[in-house]
Structures are given as C-alpha cells and as structure tokens.
Length: 134
Ligand SMILES: [Zn+2]
Image 1 (cartoon, rainbow, N blue to C red):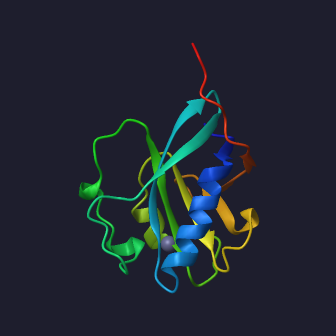
Image 2 (cartoon, rainbow, N blue to C red):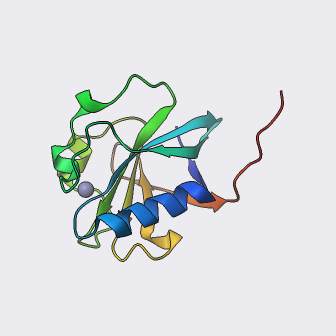
C-alpha cells in the first residue's frame, strides 16, 4: 500500500518543464525511484524509448518500455487542465503510480500522483538528496 509519493525537486521540475515544452501536445516521462516502506521516492525521469513527439498517452504502448526494475510508473501531461486520470488512462496503468500534470504546469500543485484505482495519493516535493554511502 502506497501512502505517500515523494518527488525530488529536479524530478518535479522536469515534469513541469517537459509538459510546458510539449504543450499543446502531451508529454510522457518514465519515472524511476524506489520504495521506502509505504512511500515511493521518485528520483529520476527518463524519456521513453520510441516516444513519438506529439502522440499522447493513449498511443503509448507498454511494449516500448525497457526492462527496468527501478521504473515505478509513468508521468504524462493533460493539456486540458484535468488533474485526474481518465478511464482510458487507468486502463493503461503501468507500474505502481500514475503521475499527471495539468495545464498550466506552473507549480507543484499542478502535479498529482494516483494509484491504479485512480485515487489521489498525497505527494510532496523535497530537495534533491546527496548520493549516500552505504
Ligand atoms: Zn491522461
């Protein structure tokens, strides 16, 4: 059960800036991170392989995804401004969380994290962490 989604600041900034850059089309990013008990820390974004600029999430195909155990989900933008997943989005849910950023993509309040049922998950943005030594 995931109760909290934590974004490193650089990730949240990348989500917003990619959405602004793709507008009026949808931007799609893969999210990498790790589980921290009942939270997910998202600490890296990747541009999906074979992503075709201008195509929306609805054309996004799971088989384009690399085998990558650090993938925790997919982020996409909603130029419409709706900060919630559509039924179609939920039918294409991949990973543990779905992140949506809604137009105007101006603040962290324009980013929402959802579970596979479409429920909004609490989220927070935190300063980037320094690499840790074990
Ligand atoms: Zn969508």
